[in-house]
Image (tube, rainbow, N blue to C red):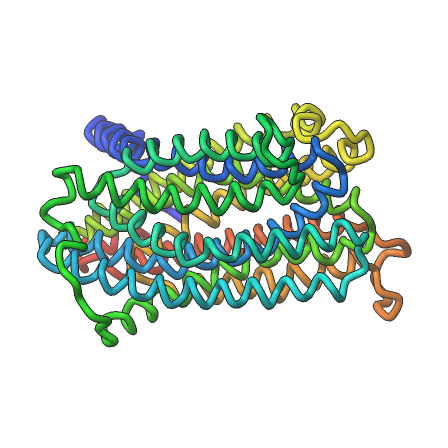
Length: 475
């Protein structure tokens, strides 16, 4: 496959174009990255503090976080329909339509957030039917019930997040996320360990810290937007607007496949925590620590992808598919460079990373083994998230959904079940269950399939939008 990047090293003008695009992409991405790292850092703080409280606290919080992650990441995908919609309007210079879209997206967020709250409460009942230590089960249930209250707030925040990103306002998101991380650390310290006379709640303190910080995120972003002149021309809350079902339907049509895509991937990771629970707290804790750290690393390609979605969407809105295609492949190349670096660092410092989360020797050893597998899938994981974001910039969402569902639910989860659980009725399964390691090997396979499929799809979609005069250049 030859992309527009093949000309970069031949012609000085093209090299200048590449440098300019890298600079523009990074200028948009780095505040998103800091904000995303701070947001995920809150989950890191939760897991790390619970881990230093006790192994049971860590296991209970890990199970609760598995439900939380599955639902909020799905909500993130469902709310992402606002990103390409607003980006196209900005690129076309149609700022008058932005407030209407954002208002209707907020109605959608409120409804889906309440639905997610109900689903979380239902999911908490599942822990009663699992073989868990009583303390671990009770903590997992209480964690899920408390954090479920944050679902509608989180959904509305992600709509405003996408709106702000799509009008090139990413620094406010960074500042608010950093303040939220600081707040989360303080509240965790007060409630998990009972500092300064507060009740010692252990892992349950992490749930209250999550709820408080999500509410702060939404309130702080609304305050900033109301005060900043950058939002005045597109401010969506200057007037009340009732739900407009055709617009909400259009947003759902665009966002539902993204939400399903996000669910397909995150559920594969979250269900592992539930499936390995029968192997004991060590397996659950090691999986959650490895997942928690790789989620932190994942924020770099995700941030690049979100910035790339905006860049591609604005170029397409401006009627320049040639530039959009160039931007897409520049983003993929930049992501791959980071993936190589992160893979090496994770492999070299696997034990040190595990030790930062817990002092339990058994958990450290198993976590380090899982992190080595995480190092292996850095290239495929980075490729799949950046290419999928670029494709969404084209407002194409159903095909990436099909690829992710196939990769994770047809290949990864069944293979993980065979390797991790090793049921006796499956003749080709290993003699002994591999536990978390078996599932992580399957994740490597699933992510690789997704990456290959999405690269093919991006090339096809980008070529289909080119004018006839440019088609020969892409072959």
